[in-house]
Length: 285
Image (cartoon, rainbow, N blue to C red; front, side):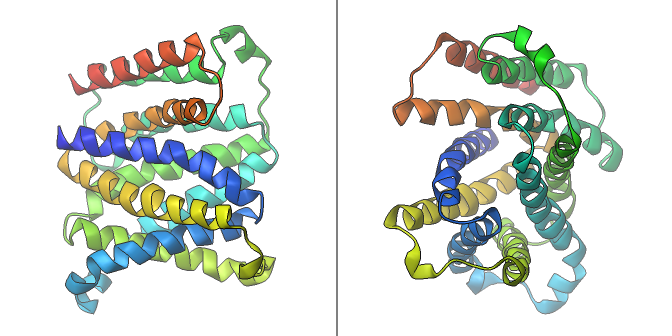
């Protein structure tokens, strides 16, 4: 039950991230937005972890897992996701990211040798139907009109990185504490954004609005530090497969925040939410 709570809270925060990121992207490019997100995410994680950081020897021994999750998964996901969205419709991105639970089960089977279970596949399928229903606004006939391009391949790569993150956290995060593993992986992601910034330029810090900084702090603290800490803790308590299906809660959470922020609620929001929750229940069974 703790893992379910952790995954649900994380999915809610990640749903809010889309709205906060949209505010930030009105003032900066996505590389700079990614840097500020992880900068404000690393700071609270540092406060949480600095007293109990592992020795340099232990970090060196566990560096492979830390690097794979921090650079390949966190940084790679963000980079390929935004690059893909630059020339691809948002609906394509949402559809492709919704494949993450299925990819997680596949990678878990290949890397962790986790057996494929019919109830897991059934739960993923039910949740996926709910996500599709939400994305297509209750009109499945519009699915046939969607066209895929090379940019969608970048989105598929980003979704694969996210699925690998779930598996590699389960594989590599057992030796050092969750707070230290979360801090070190997010630190590597932030440094990766920092290395790219000189090549694309950076807006003057004083030119940003107060709303930008509030959004950056919010997406950093809640949508990054707290979210990844709880997500990794949940994976360590259960499995990568159990975590993967909760990704489908994110678009539903995004839709709920849209309603809170003044957008209209439609019947397809409720129907999709029921399907997503039902899929999670079936998978847990």
